Length: 615
Image (tube, rainbow, N blue to C red):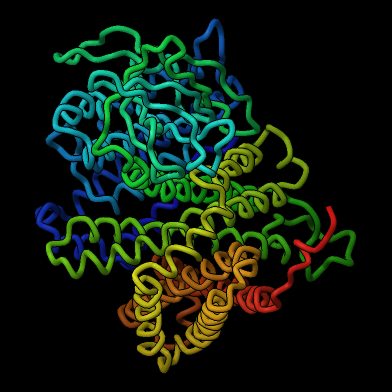
Protein backbone atom coordinates (compact mmCIF):
# COMPACT_ATOMS: atom_id res chain seq x y z
CA UNK A 1 0.00 0.00 0.00
CA UNK A 2 1.69 3.26 -1.06
CA UNK A 3 2.13 6.11 1.38
CA UNK A 4 -0.18 9.08 0.91
CA UNK A 5 1.60 12.06 -0.53
CA UNK A 6 0.61 15.57 -1.46
CA UNK A 7 1.65 17.62 -4.49
CA UNK A 8 2.96 20.43 -2.30
CA UNK A 9 4.79 22.17 -5.14
CA UNK A 10 1.72 22.53 -7.33
CA UNK A 11 -0.45 23.61 -4.41
CA UNK A 12 1.97 26.40 -3.62
CA UNK A 13 2.29 27.30 -7.29
CA UNK A 14 -1.45 27.91 -7.56
CA UNK A 15 -1.75 29.71 -4.22
CA UNK A 16 1.23 32.02 -4.43
CA UNK A 17 2.37 32.24 -8.05
CA UNK A 18 -0.87 32.05 -10.00
CA UNK A 19 -3.41 33.49 -7.54
CA UNK A 20 -0.90 35.55 -5.54
CA UNK A 21 -3.14 34.86 -2.57
CA UNK A 22 -0.80 36.37 0.00
CA UNK A 23 -0.79 39.69 -1.87
CA UNK A 24 -4.46 39.90 -2.91
CA UNK A 25 -5.76 39.09 0.56
CA UNK A 26 -3.84 42.04 1.97
CA UNK A 27 -6.69 44.14 0.54
CA UNK A 28 -8.99 42.59 3.17
CA UNK A 29 -8.65 44.17 6.65
CA UNK A 30 -9.03 40.82 8.44
CA UNK A 31 -5.99 39.45 6.62
CA UNK A 32 -3.69 42.47 6.46
CA UNK A 33 -1.38 41.05 9.11
CA UNK A 34 -1.23 37.61 7.49
CA UNK A 35 1.69 36.67 5.25
CA UNK A 36 3.02 33.72 3.31
CA UNK A 37 5.04 32.45 6.27
CA UNK A 38 1.85 32.13 8.30
CA UNK A 39 -0.05 30.44 5.48
CA UNK A 40 2.84 28.05 4.87
CA UNK A 41 3.03 27.19 8.55
CA UNK A 42 -0.65 26.19 8.55
CA UNK A 43 -0.29 24.29 5.28
CA UNK A 44 2.79 22.43 6.51
CA UNK A 45 1.02 21.39 9.70
CA UNK A 46 -1.99 20.22 7.70
CA UNK A 47 0.19 18.10 5.43
CA UNK A 48 2.00 16.60 8.40
CA UNK A 49 -1.25 15.76 10.18
CA UNK A 50 -2.89 14.40 7.02
CA UNK A 51 0.05 12.14 6.17
CA UNK A 52 0.78 10.90 9.69
CA UNK A 53 -2.70 10.74 11.24
CA UNK A 54 -5.56 10.85 8.74
CA UNK A 55 -4.20 8.81 5.82
CA UNK A 56 -3.41 5.74 7.98
CA UNK A 57 -7.12 5.37 8.90
CA UNK A 58 -8.38 5.62 5.33
CA UNK A 59 -8.12 1.95 4.45
CA UNK A 60 -9.15 0.61 7.86
CA UNK A 61 -12.18 2.89 7.81
CA UNK A 62 -13.15 1.51 4.41
CA UNK A 63 -12.68 -2.13 5.41
CA UNK A 64 -14.27 -1.90 8.87
CA UNK A 65 -17.06 0.42 7.79
CA UNK A 66 -19.86 1.63 10.06
CA UNK A 67 -22.12 -0.53 12.22
CA UNK A 68 -25.78 -0.21 13.15
CA UNK A 69 -26.72 -2.11 16.32
CA UNK A 70 -29.69 -1.69 18.62
CA UNK A 71 -30.64 1.67 17.15
CA UNK A 72 -27.15 3.13 17.35
CA UNK A 73 -24.48 3.82 14.71
CA UNK A 74 -20.79 3.21 15.30
CA UNK A 75 -18.01 4.75 13.24
CA UNK A 76 -14.86 2.76 12.41
CA UNK A 77 -12.90 2.31 15.64
CA UNK A 78 -9.72 3.71 14.09
CA UNK A 79 -11.41 7.09 13.52
CA UNK A 80 -12.04 8.12 17.09
CA UNK A 81 -8.58 9.00 18.33
CA UNK A 82 -7.69 10.76 15.08
CA UNK A 83 -10.92 12.76 15.17
CA UNK A 84 -10.14 13.85 18.72
CA UNK A 85 -6.68 15.05 17.68
CA UNK A 86 -8.11 16.73 14.57
CA UNK A 87 -10.64 18.64 16.65
CA UNK A 88 -8.15 19.59 19.37
CA UNK A 89 -5.79 20.99 16.72
CA UNK A 90 -8.51 23.42 15.63
CA UNK A 91 -8.91 22.17 12.07
CA UNK A 92 -12.73 22.17 12.17
CA UNK A 93 -12.87 25.92 12.70
CA UNK A 94 -9.93 26.87 10.50
CA UNK A 95 -11.83 29.52 8.53
CA UNK A 96 -14.47 30.34 11.16
CA UNK A 97 -14.86 33.46 13.28
CA UNK A 98 -12.37 33.51 16.20
CA UNK A 99 -15.06 35.03 18.43
CA UNK A 100 -16.81 31.65 18.42
CA UNK A 101 -13.78 29.39 18.54
CA UNK A 102 -12.55 29.52 14.94
CA UNK A 103 -9.07 30.27 13.62
CA UNK A 104 -10.08 33.09 11.27
CA UNK A 105 -8.05 31.89 8.29
CA UNK A 106 -9.09 32.83 4.70
CA UNK A 107 -11.25 30.52 2.62
CA UNK A 108 -8.52 30.27 -0.03
CA UNK A 109 -6.19 28.62 2.44
CA UNK A 110 -9.08 26.55 3.75
CA UNK A 111 -9.65 25.09 0.29
CA UNK A 112 -5.99 24.02 0.05
CA UNK A 113 -6.07 22.50 3.54
CA UNK A 114 -9.31 20.72 2.63
CA UNK A 115 -7.58 19.15 -0.35
CA UNK A 116 -4.79 17.85 1.85
CA UNK A 117 -7.17 16.24 4.35
CA UNK A 118 -9.74 15.01 1.82
CA UNK A 119 -7.07 13.25 -0.21
CA UNK A 120 -5.96 11.49 2.96
CA UNK A 121 -9.47 10.16 3.68
CA UNK A 122 -12.66 11.38 2.04
CA UNK A 123 -14.96 9.49 4.39
CA UNK A 124 -13.22 10.73 7.54
CA UNK A 125 -13.23 14.43 6.65
CA UNK A 126 -16.96 14.41 5.96
CA UNK A 127 -17.61 14.41 9.71
CA UNK A 128 -15.75 17.65 10.55
CA UNK A 129 -16.46 19.16 7.13
CA UNK A 130 -20.24 19.08 7.55
CA UNK A 131 -19.95 20.43 11.08
CA UNK A 132 -17.93 23.39 9.83
CA UNK A 133 -20.51 24.16 7.13
CA UNK A 134 -23.41 23.91 9.58
CA UNK A 135 -21.60 26.25 11.97
CA UNK A 136 -21.03 28.70 9.13
CA UNK A 137 -24.74 28.81 8.40
CA UNK A 138 -25.53 29.49 12.05
CA UNK A 139 -22.96 32.29 12.15
CA UNK A 140 -24.67 33.93 9.17
CA UNK A 141 -28.34 33.40 10.01
CA UNK A 142 -28.66 32.08 13.55
CA UNK A 143 -29.68 34.12 16.55
CA UNK A 144 -27.06 35.37 19.00
CA UNK A 145 -28.17 32.65 21.40
CA UNK A 146 -27.63 29.97 18.75
CA UNK A 147 -24.19 31.32 17.90
CA UNK A 148 -23.04 31.37 21.51
CA UNK A 149 -24.66 28.13 22.61
CA UNK A 150 -24.01 25.86 19.64
CA UNK A 151 -21.19 27.10 17.40
CA UNK A 152 -18.25 26.90 19.86
CA UNK A 153 -19.11 23.31 20.72
CA UNK A 154 -19.46 22.42 17.06
CA UNK A 155 -16.11 23.97 16.14
CA UNK A 156 -14.45 22.22 19.07
CA UNK A 157 -15.66 18.90 17.70
CA UNK A 158 -17.83 18.09 20.72
CA UNK A 159 -20.98 18.20 18.61
CA UNK A 160 -21.66 17.13 15.03
CA UNK A 161 -23.50 19.37 12.57
CA UNK A 162 -25.65 18.02 9.73
CA UNK A 163 -27.90 19.22 6.91
CA UNK A 164 -31.26 17.45 6.58
CA UNK A 165 -32.92 18.01 3.21
CA UNK A 166 -33.51 14.70 1.44
CA UNK A 167 -36.67 12.67 2.00
CA UNK A 168 -37.93 9.38 0.52
CA UNK A 169 -40.20 11.19 -1.97
CA UNK A 170 -38.15 14.37 -2.26
CA UNK A 171 -34.59 13.76 -3.34
CA UNK A 172 -33.28 16.57 -5.48
CA UNK A 173 -36.89 17.82 -5.60
CA UNK A 174 -36.47 19.56 -2.24
CA UNK A 175 -39.68 21.55 -2.71
CA UNK A 176 -41.67 18.31 -2.37
CA UNK A 177 -40.60 17.98 1.26
CA UNK A 178 -43.26 16.52 3.55
CA UNK A 179 -41.57 17.07 6.91
CA UNK A 180 -43.88 19.22 9.04
CA UNK A 181 -43.25 21.98 11.54
CA UNK A 182 -46.18 22.28 13.93
CA UNK A 183 -46.45 25.56 15.80
CA UNK A 184 -47.79 25.36 19.38
CA UNK A 185 -47.71 28.23 21.86
CA UNK A 186 -44.82 29.91 20.09
CA UNK A 187 -42.77 26.69 19.87
CA UNK A 188 -42.13 24.51 16.82
CA UNK A 189 -42.37 20.72 16.78
CA UNK A 190 -40.90 18.74 13.88
CA UNK A 191 -42.41 15.58 12.40
CA UNK A 192 -41.04 13.68 9.42
CA UNK A 193 -38.25 11.55 8.04
CA UNK A 194 -35.00 12.49 6.35
CA UNK A 195 -32.80 10.07 4.42
CA UNK A 196 -29.20 9.97 3.18
CA UNK A 197 -28.06 12.21 6.05
CA UNK A 198 -24.27 12.19 6.11
CA UNK A 199 -22.89 11.94 9.66
CA UNK A 200 -26.54 11.87 10.78
CA UNK A 201 -25.95 9.99 14.03
CA UNK A 202 -22.90 8.23 15.46
CA UNK A 203 -20.87 7.53 18.57
CA UNK A 204 -17.98 9.92 17.86
CA UNK A 205 -19.72 13.02 19.25
CA UNK A 206 -22.10 13.40 22.18
CA UNK A 207 -24.69 15.53 20.37
CA UNK A 208 -25.89 16.13 16.84
CA UNK A 209 -27.11 19.52 15.66
CA UNK A 210 -29.42 18.98 12.71
CA UNK A 211 -30.38 21.78 10.33
CA UNK A 212 -33.79 20.64 9.12
CA UNK A 213 -36.01 21.96 6.35
CA UNK A 214 -39.70 21.61 7.26
CA UNK A 215 -43.03 23.08 6.20
CA UNK A 216 -45.40 24.97 8.44
CA UNK A 217 -49.15 24.44 8.08
CA UNK A 218 -50.53 26.83 5.47
CA UNK A 219 -47.10 27.61 4.02
CA UNK A 220 -46.82 28.11 0.24
CA UNK A 221 -46.10 25.00 -1.87
CA UNK A 222 -42.63 24.22 -3.19
CA UNK A 223 -39.37 25.56 -1.83
CA UNK A 224 -40.95 28.96 -1.00
CA UNK A 225 -42.85 27.35 1.87
CA UNK A 226 -39.89 25.74 3.61
CA UNK A 227 -38.54 26.98 6.91
CA UNK A 228 -35.21 26.08 8.50
CA UNK A 229 -34.90 24.74 12.03
CA UNK A 230 -32.08 23.89 14.38
CA UNK A 231 -32.96 20.50 15.84
CA UNK A 232 -30.54 19.03 18.40
CA UNK A 233 -30.56 15.33 19.14
CA UNK A 234 -30.36 16.27 22.81
CA UNK A 235 -31.72 19.59 23.97
CA UNK A 236 -29.15 22.00 25.32
CA UNK A 237 -29.44 23.79 28.64
CA UNK A 238 -28.57 27.51 28.94
CA UNK A 239 -25.17 26.62 30.41
CA UNK A 240 -24.34 24.41 27.42
CA UNK A 241 -24.88 21.10 29.19
CA UNK A 242 -27.02 18.42 27.57
CA UNK A 243 -30.66 18.15 28.49
CA UNK A 244 -33.39 15.70 27.57
CA UNK A 245 -33.57 13.54 24.45
CA UNK A 246 -35.32 15.48 21.65
CA UNK A 247 -37.23 12.65 19.95
CA UNK A 248 -34.78 12.31 17.03
CA UNK A 249 -34.41 8.63 16.20
CA UNK A 250 -31.85 6.83 14.05
CA UNK A 251 -33.82 4.42 11.87
CA UNK A 252 -31.00 2.83 9.87
CA UNK A 253 -27.74 3.46 8.03
CA UNK A 254 -26.95 2.84 4.37
CA UNK A 255 -24.54 0.23 3.00
CA UNK A 256 -22.71 1.90 0.13
CA UNK A 257 -20.22 1.18 -2.63
CA UNK A 258 -17.81 3.76 -1.21
CA UNK A 259 -17.16 6.16 1.69
CA UNK A 260 -17.79 3.16 3.92
CA UNK A 261 -16.35 4.95 6.93
CA UNK A 262 -19.01 7.66 6.72
CA UNK A 263 -22.34 7.10 8.45
CA UNK A 264 -25.22 7.78 6.06
CA UNK A 265 -28.35 7.80 8.16
CA UNK A 266 -32.12 7.70 7.96
CA UNK A 267 -33.53 9.88 10.73
CA UNK A 268 -37.05 10.10 12.12
CA UNK A 269 -38.10 13.34 13.79
CA UNK A 270 -40.97 13.53 16.27
CA UNK A 271 -42.21 9.94 16.39
CA UNK A 272 -43.65 10.78 19.81
CA UNK A 273 -44.56 14.38 19.03
CA UNK A 274 -41.76 15.73 21.22
CA UNK A 275 -39.14 16.86 18.70
CA UNK A 276 -38.64 20.58 19.21
CA UNK A 277 -36.98 22.71 16.56
CA UNK A 278 -35.74 26.25 16.83
CA UNK A 279 -36.53 28.54 13.92
CA UNK A 280 -33.53 29.99 12.11
CA UNK A 281 -34.30 33.43 10.74
CA UNK A 282 -37.82 33.94 9.41
CA UNK A 283 -40.53 31.49 8.48
CA UNK A 284 -40.69 30.33 4.84
CA UNK A 285 -37.14 31.51 4.08
CA UNK A 286 -35.41 28.24 4.90
CA UNK A 287 -34.27 27.44 1.39
CA UNK A 288 -32.59 30.85 1.10
CA UNK A 289 -30.62 30.19 4.28
CA UNK A 290 -29.84 26.61 3.36
CA UNK A 291 -28.36 27.71 0.04
CA UNK A 292 -25.41 29.14 1.96
CA UNK A 293 -24.59 25.70 3.30
CA UNK A 294 -25.53 23.94 0.07
CA UNK A 295 -23.28 26.15 -2.05
CA UNK A 296 -20.41 25.76 0.38
CA UNK A 297 -20.98 22.02 0.36
CA UNK A 298 -21.08 21.97 -3.46
CA UNK A 299 -17.66 23.57 -3.65
CA UNK A 300 -16.50 21.24 -0.89
CA UNK A 301 -17.83 18.25 -2.81
CA UNK A 302 -15.84 19.28 -5.87
CA UNK A 303 -12.81 19.54 -3.61
CA UNK A 304 -13.38 16.05 -2.17
CA UNK A 305 -13.43 14.68 -5.72
CA UNK A 306 -10.35 16.57 -6.88
CA UNK A 307 -8.35 15.66 -3.77
CA UNK A 308 -8.98 11.94 -4.23
CA UNK A 309 -8.26 12.21 -7.94
CA UNK A 310 -4.95 13.88 -7.06
CA UNK A 311 -4.09 11.04 -4.69
CA UNK A 312 -5.08 8.44 -7.31
CA UNK A 313 -2.93 10.17 -9.95
CA UNK A 314 0.16 10.31 -7.73
CA UNK A 315 -0.25 6.64 -6.79
CA UNK A 316 -0.59 5.70 -10.47
CA UNK A 317 2.46 7.78 -11.35
CA UNK A 318 4.56 6.02 -8.70
CA UNK A 319 3.31 2.62 -9.84
CA UNK A 320 4.10 3.41 -13.47
CA UNK A 321 7.71 4.15 -12.49
CA UNK A 322 8.02 0.94 -10.46
CA UNK A 323 6.13 -1.63 -12.53
CA UNK A 324 8.27 -3.26 -15.23
CA UNK A 325 6.45 -4.85 -18.13
CA UNK A 326 7.17 -5.05 -21.84
CA UNK A 327 10.07 -3.66 -23.81
CA UNK A 328 10.71 -0.06 -24.81
CA UNK A 329 8.44 1.08 -27.64
CA UNK A 330 11.46 1.47 -29.94
CA UNK A 331 12.26 -2.24 -29.43
CA UNK A 332 8.79 -3.75 -29.22
CA UNK A 333 9.56 -6.31 -31.94
CA UNK A 334 12.62 -7.62 -30.11
CA UNK A 335 11.62 -10.42 -27.67
CA UNK A 336 15.05 -10.29 -26.04
CA UNK A 337 14.91 -6.56 -25.25
CA UNK A 338 15.03 -5.67 -21.54
CA UNK A 339 11.79 -5.03 -19.69
CA UNK A 340 11.14 -1.37 -18.85
CA UNK A 341 8.93 0.51 -16.39
CA UNK A 342 5.50 1.04 -17.91
CA UNK A 343 5.98 4.81 -17.70
CA UNK A 344 8.03 4.35 -20.89
CA UNK A 345 4.99 3.13 -22.84
CA UNK A 346 3.30 5.90 -24.87
CA UNK A 347 -0.26 4.88 -23.97
CA UNK A 348 0.58 4.88 -20.27
CA UNK A 349 2.16 8.30 -20.70
CA UNK A 350 -1.06 9.46 -22.34
CA UNK A 351 -3.11 8.27 -19.37
CA UNK A 352 -0.70 9.83 -16.89
CA UNK A 353 -0.91 13.16 -18.70
CA UNK A 354 -4.69 13.11 -18.75
CA UNK A 355 -4.65 12.55 -15.00
CA UNK A 356 -1.96 15.14 -14.31
CA UNK A 357 -3.46 17.89 -16.47
CA UNK A 358 -6.99 17.27 -15.22
CA UNK A 359 -5.97 17.32 -11.56
CA UNK A 360 -3.89 20.47 -11.95
CA UNK A 361 -6.68 22.18 -13.87
CA UNK A 362 -9.29 21.25 -11.27
CA UNK A 363 -7.00 22.42 -8.48
CA UNK A 364 -6.70 25.81 -10.13
CA UNK A 365 -10.48 26.03 -10.64
CA UNK A 366 -11.30 25.22 -7.02
CA UNK A 367 -8.61 27.47 -5.56
CA UNK A 368 -9.87 30.33 -7.75
CA UNK A 369 -13.34 29.74 -6.33
CA UNK A 370 -11.89 29.85 -2.81
CA UNK A 371 -10.25 33.21 -3.50
CA UNK A 372 -13.44 34.55 -5.04
CA UNK A 373 -15.30 33.56 -1.85
CA UNK A 374 -12.88 35.57 0.30
CA UNK A 375 -13.07 38.63 -1.93
CA UNK A 376 -16.86 38.40 -2.28
CA UNK A 377 -17.44 38.24 1.44
CA UNK A 378 -14.81 40.50 2.96
CA UNK A 379 -13.35 42.95 0.47
CA UNK A 380 -13.98 46.53 1.66
CA UNK A 381 -15.10 47.76 -1.79
CA UNK A 382 -18.74 46.91 -2.51
CA UNK A 383 -18.18 46.81 -6.28
CA UNK A 384 -15.31 44.35 -5.85
CA UNK A 385 -17.48 42.19 -3.60
CA UNK A 386 -20.24 42.16 -6.23
CA UNK A 387 -17.79 41.30 -9.00
CA UNK A 388 -16.41 38.26 -7.21
CA UNK A 389 -19.80 37.16 -5.89
CA UNK A 390 -20.99 37.03 -9.50
CA UNK A 391 -18.02 34.88 -10.50
CA UNK A 392 -18.46 32.68 -7.44
CA UNK A 393 -22.16 32.13 -8.15
CA UNK A 394 -21.53 31.35 -11.81
CA UNK A 395 -18.71 28.90 -11.17
CA UNK A 396 -20.20 27.04 -8.18
CA UNK A 397 -22.20 24.47 -10.25
CA UNK A 398 -19.16 24.00 -12.50
CA UNK A 399 -16.82 23.57 -9.53
CA UNK A 400 -19.14 20.87 -8.21
CA UNK A 401 -20.29 19.00 -11.31
CA UNK A 402 -17.36 19.34 -13.69
CA UNK A 403 -14.86 18.59 -10.92
CA UNK A 404 -16.67 15.47 -9.72
CA UNK A 405 -17.21 14.09 -13.23
CA UNK A 406 -13.63 14.69 -14.32
CA UNK A 407 -12.19 13.41 -11.05
CA UNK A 408 -14.02 10.11 -11.47
CA UNK A 409 -12.43 9.74 -14.90
CA UNK A 410 -9.02 10.38 -13.36
CA UNK A 411 -9.61 7.62 -10.81
CA UNK A 412 -10.79 5.30 -13.58
CA UNK A 413 -7.53 5.92 -15.47
CA UNK A 414 -5.55 5.32 -12.29
CA UNK A 415 -7.14 1.88 -12.02
CA UNK A 416 -6.38 1.29 -15.70
CA UNK A 417 -2.74 2.22 -15.16
CA UNK A 418 -2.41 -0.48 -12.53
CA UNK A 419 -4.04 -3.04 -14.80
CA UNK A 420 -5.41 -6.06 -12.96
CA UNK A 421 -3.85 -4.98 -9.69
CA UNK A 422 -5.88 -1.77 -9.82
CA UNK A 423 -9.04 -3.84 -9.57
CA UNK A 424 -7.92 -5.44 -6.31
CA UNK A 425 -7.89 -4.15 -2.76
CA UNK A 426 -4.11 -4.49 -2.68
CA UNK A 427 -3.87 -0.88 -3.86
CA UNK A 428 -5.76 2.29 -2.97
CA UNK A 429 -6.92 3.28 -6.43
CA UNK A 430 -10.02 1.08 -6.38
CA UNK A 431 -11.13 2.80 -3.15
CA UNK A 432 -10.51 6.24 -4.64
CA UNK A 433 -12.74 5.27 -7.56
CA UNK A 434 -15.54 4.07 -5.27
CA UNK A 435 -15.27 7.02 -2.91
CA UNK A 436 -15.24 9.66 -5.64
CA UNK A 437 -18.42 8.42 -7.31
CA UNK A 438 -20.73 9.82 -4.64
CA UNK A 439 -19.49 13.35 -5.34
CA UNK A 440 -21.38 13.54 -8.64
CA UNK A 441 -24.58 12.68 -6.74
CA UNK A 442 -24.15 14.70 -3.54
CA UNK A 443 -25.52 18.22 -3.05
CA UNK A 444 -27.79 18.09 -6.07
CA UNK A 445 -26.89 15.52 -8.72
CA UNK A 446 -24.83 16.88 -11.58
CA UNK A 447 -27.82 17.15 -13.89
CA UNK A 448 -29.36 19.51 -11.31
CA UNK A 449 -26.16 21.54 -11.31
CA UNK A 450 -26.32 21.81 -15.08
CA UNK A 451 -29.87 23.14 -14.94
CA UNK A 452 -28.87 25.57 -12.19
CA UNK A 453 -26.10 26.88 -14.43
CA UNK A 454 -28.27 27.20 -17.52
CA UNK A 455 -31.63 28.33 -16.14
CA UNK A 456 -30.48 30.38 -13.17
CA UNK A 457 -26.86 31.46 -13.20
CA UNK A 458 -26.68 32.27 -16.92
CA UNK A 459 -29.79 34.45 -16.72
CA UNK A 460 -29.34 36.00 -13.27
CA UNK A 461 -29.27 39.81 -13.22
CA UNK A 462 -29.92 39.93 -16.94
CA UNK A 463 -26.93 37.71 -17.77
CA UNK A 464 -24.50 39.83 -15.73
CA UNK A 465 -22.67 36.85 -14.21
CA UNK A 466 -21.89 35.33 -17.59
CA UNK A 467 -20.80 38.68 -18.99
CA UNK A 468 -18.41 39.25 -16.09
CA UNK A 469 -16.69 35.97 -16.79
CA UNK A 470 -16.60 36.61 -20.52
CA UNK A 471 -15.09 40.06 -19.97
CA UNK A 472 -12.26 38.57 -17.91
CA UNK A 473 -11.69 35.80 -20.43
CA UNK A 474 -11.69 38.22 -23.39
CA UNK A 475 -9.26 40.56 -21.65
CA UNK A 476 -6.89 37.67 -20.98
CA UNK A 477 -7.04 36.53 -24.60
CA UNK A 478 -6.49 40.04 -25.97
CA UNK A 479 -3.60 40.71 -23.64
CA UNK A 480 -1.59 37.60 -24.49
CA UNK A 481 -2.63 36.64 -28.03
CA UNK A 482 0.42 38.24 -29.65
CA UNK A 483 3.02 36.88 -27.23
CA UNK A 484 5.19 34.41 -29.11
CA UNK A 485 5.20 31.67 -26.48
CA UNK A 486 1.51 32.11 -25.66
CA UNK A 487 0.05 32.40 -29.15
CA UNK A 488 -0.71 28.72 -29.66
CA UNK A 489 -2.33 28.42 -26.23
CA UNK A 490 -4.41 31.52 -26.77
CA UNK A 491 -5.62 30.52 -30.23
CA UNK A 492 -6.99 27.23 -28.85
CA UNK A 493 -8.58 28.99 -25.90
CA UNK A 494 -10.16 31.61 -28.20
CA UNK A 495 -11.70 28.89 -30.38
CA UNK A 496 -13.18 27.22 -27.31
CA UNK A 497 -14.53 30.57 -26.13
CA UNK A 498 -16.25 31.06 -29.46
CA UNK A 499 -18.04 27.72 -29.06
CA UNK A 500 -19.16 28.69 -25.57
CA UNK A 501 -20.61 31.98 -26.83
CA UNK A 502 -22.19 30.42 -29.91
CA UNK A 503 -24.20 27.96 -27.85
CA UNK A 504 -25.15 30.64 -25.32
CA UNK A 505 -26.61 32.67 -28.19
CA UNK A 506 -28.48 29.62 -29.49
CA UNK A 507 -29.93 29.10 -26.01
CA UNK A 508 -31.21 32.67 -26.04
CA UNK A 509 -33.07 31.91 -29.24
CA UNK A 510 -34.40 28.66 -27.75
CA UNK A 511 -35.72 30.52 -24.71
CA UNK A 512 -37.35 33.19 -26.90
CA UNK A 513 -39.08 30.58 -29.05
CA UNK A 514 -40.10 28.39 -26.10
CA UNK A 515 -37.80 25.49 -27.06
CA UNK A 516 -37.06 24.64 -23.44
CA UNK A 517 -36.79 20.93 -24.19
CA UNK A 518 -33.54 21.59 -26.06
CA UNK A 519 -32.12 23.38 -23.04
CA UNK A 520 -33.11 20.55 -20.71
CA UNK A 521 -31.66 17.87 -23.00
CA UNK A 522 -28.33 19.64 -23.44
CA UNK A 523 -27.73 21.35 -20.08
CA UNK A 524 -25.28 18.68 -18.93
CA UNK A 525 -23.12 18.72 -22.09
CA UNK A 526 -23.12 22.51 -21.89
CA UNK A 527 -21.83 22.45 -18.32
CA UNK A 528 -19.04 20.13 -19.46
CA UNK A 529 -18.28 22.45 -22.37
CA UNK A 530 -18.23 25.44 -19.99
CA UNK A 531 -16.00 23.54 -17.57
CA UNK A 532 -13.44 22.79 -20.28
CA UNK A 533 -13.34 26.48 -21.21
CA UNK A 534 -12.97 27.70 -17.61
CA UNK A 535 -10.22 25.22 -16.81
CA UNK A 536 -8.58 25.90 -20.18
CA UNK A 537 -8.49 29.59 -19.24
CA UNK A 538 -6.92 28.92 -15.84
CA UNK A 539 -4.46 26.46 -17.36
CA UNK A 540 -3.39 28.98 -20.00
CA UNK A 541 -2.86 31.44 -17.17
CA UNK A 542 -0.63 28.87 -15.48
CA UNK A 543 1.41 28.66 -18.66
CA UNK A 544 1.81 32.45 -18.58
CA UNK A 545 3.31 32.26 -15.09
CA UNK A 546 5.47 29.22 -15.85
CA UNK A 547 6.90 30.71 -19.06
CA UNK A 548 7.93 33.86 -17.21
CA UNK A 549 9.48 31.95 -14.30
CA UNK A 550 11.36 29.57 -16.58
CA UNK A 551 12.77 32.45 -18.63
CA UNK A 552 14.01 34.05 -15.41
CA UNK A 553 15.78 30.83 -14.40
CA UNK A 554 17.36 30.46 -17.85
CA UNK A 555 18.66 34.02 -17.65
CA UNK A 556 19.97 33.66 -14.10
CA UNK A 557 21.76 30.40 -14.96
CA UNK A 558 23.14 31.61 -18.28
CA UNK A 559 21.22 28.98 -20.25
CA UNK A 560 21.17 30.93 -23.50
CA UNK A 561 21.03 28.00 -25.93
CA UNK A 562 18.49 25.24 -26.43
CA UNK A 563 21.07 22.63 -25.41
CA UNK A 564 21.89 24.43 -22.16
CA UNK A 565 18.22 24.88 -21.40
CA UNK A 566 17.50 21.17 -21.85
CA UNK A 567 20.39 20.29 -19.55
CA UNK A 568 19.21 22.79 -16.95
CA UNK A 569 15.68 21.37 -17.01
CA UNK A 570 17.09 17.91 -16.33
CA UNK A 571 19.24 19.08 -13.41
CA UNK A 572 17.33 21.96 -11.79
CA UNK A 573 14.13 21.02 -9.94
CA UNK A 574 12.52 24.44 -10.27
CA UNK A 575 13.28 24.63 -13.98
CA UNK A 576 11.89 21.11 -14.38
CA UNK A 577 8.69 22.08 -12.57
CA UNK A 578 8.00 25.09 -14.80
CA UNK A 579 8.98 23.20 -17.96
CA UNK A 580 6.62 20.36 -17.03
CA UNK A 581 3.88 22.84 -16.19
CA UNK A 582 4.09 24.28 -19.71
CA UNK A 583 3.95 20.79 -21.21
CA UNK A 584 0.98 19.93 -19.00
CA UNK A 585 -0.93 23.01 -20.16
CA UNK A 586 -0.06 22.18 -23.75
CA UNK A 587 -1.46 18.69 -23.30
CA UNK A 588 -4.67 19.90 -21.65
CA UNK A 589 -5.36 22.44 -24.35
CA UNK A 590 -4.67 19.83 -27.06
CA UNK A 591 -6.56 17.02 -25.31
CA UNK A 592 -9.53 18.67 -23.59
CA UNK A 593 -10.33 21.76 -25.63
CA UNK A 594 -11.01 19.87 -28.89
CA UNK A 595 -13.88 18.24 -26.97
CA UNK A 596 -15.48 21.69 -26.79
CA UNK A 597 -16.06 21.69 -30.54
CA UNK A 598 -17.56 18.21 -30.40
CA UNK A 599 -19.87 19.29 -27.58
CA UNK A 600 -20.84 22.37 -29.56
CA UNK A 601 -21.83 20.15 -32.49
CA UNK A 602 -23.77 17.81 -30.20
CA UNK A 603 -25.72 20.66 -28.61
CA UNK A 604 -26.33 22.62 -31.81
CA UNK A 605 -27.92 19.59 -33.47
CA UNK A 606 -31.10 19.96 -31.37
CA UNK A 607 -31.63 16.19 -31.32
CA UNK A 608 -34.85 15.22 -29.52
CA UNK A 609 -34.63 11.48 -30.07
CA UNK A 610 -34.29 10.78 -26.31
CA UNK A 611 -37.86 12.02 -25.94
CA UNK A 612 -39.14 10.36 -29.11
CA UNK A 613 -37.82 6.87 -28.47
CA UNK A 614 -40.30 4.43 -26.92
CA UNK A 615 -38.71 3.08 -23.75
